[in-house]
Length: 494
Image 1 (tube, rainbow, N blue to C red):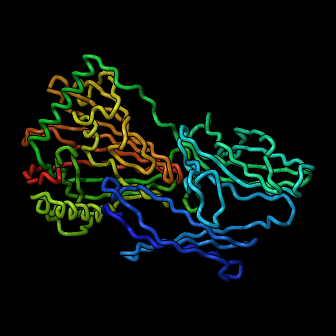
Image 2 (tube, rainbow, N blue to C red; image 1 turned 45 degrees about the vertical axis):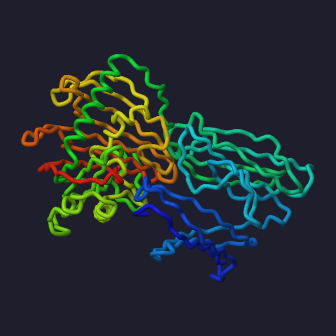
Image 3 (cartoon, rainbow, N blue to C red; image 1 turned 90 degrees about the vertical axis):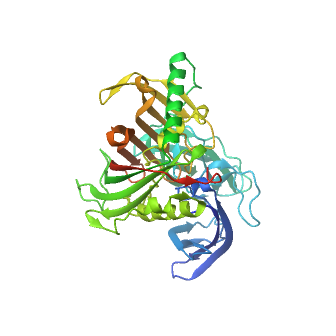
């Protein structure tokens, strides 16, 4: 979604048999509400429907369409529905979920104790379950059904194994729910396999999943005179900074590269030792002070890989001379248009929610400091300047930076206490799981622009590690030709 508000959706599911003949389907309409804070971000919504099919082999296709714009997309998979009424041992597919089901199913839909999810990447500290249904041969306990759960790592080695107690059957069927055994698993890719055996008959089901690092645990801030002095100095510095400047413009030169993660196994469609994919862009970037909302920035790309993509005129400064809802929307549309020049790993779209140079400053604003836990790190020198380091982890919700799985931000700030709490460097990190697991790091270095008598971000280095594709996206942006603008912002916007 490129704006907040409601989006009407039409959803259709169609099942075709081996001969292409329609075997079943379902249609739904609904509305998704997009809050302002996530418009344009990578938040996702999962919708459920169901189709009842007889035993057989099918192609299952799901399609969704925006009822306003008619934009549509679809995905398909192949599905085998076993004949559960033949009297032999049979298993349903494995279903994964991160929430227990607390509402009754739709009329006619199968009841499950968990809410199914399409996610296959989970943080090690979040609960997740697997569920399947077992159909035994016969409807008595004469022949016991043995159930075993195994976890295999990316190399096919068994890392966990357990035998389940006797399942509680009602007639021929039993529901089996188990917690994903993530405790003790290192971040990486795994296979969960459930094996069932009744007498000499065996059946098994598998599902792939991945584990990412747990969210960092940080104790509440323990206040000391040194820590409080650094926090107070940084808040006062940012307050002076925001009052002096209402808008900063600059030219950005940005180089991006996508390459396999070190040690990643090449996929069939990837050449061995293939060079990284590189893209270079030039853009005008404008950063606005929005009062209590901190800083927001907009990019307007005018050159890609040395070729102009539009006239080089400064559009953003003209649009944002008077900041209104309409002018902000125009600037957002320009930024969305420019975002199409971002490189992405295979099959994964990364929404760059933290690659605005001054994003990390949000966490140091006086009004926001109570949202995070801070502690002092070791003193360091940055470009010859002695700095105090502040390390933080966000504690409160809603998050200042929204992601699909609501992970907290964490980072480090380098502060020049000898010069009034001046910010010299920032580093912001987010480890997002959910449907798209991305580990991101963004470091920004500040320097003095003499003709402006101002410290501004001059270099931004970023890294995005994508678990699903085993690729890394890197970027380096440098900033020059800084300009100050005086803009008018309505109180309604602030």
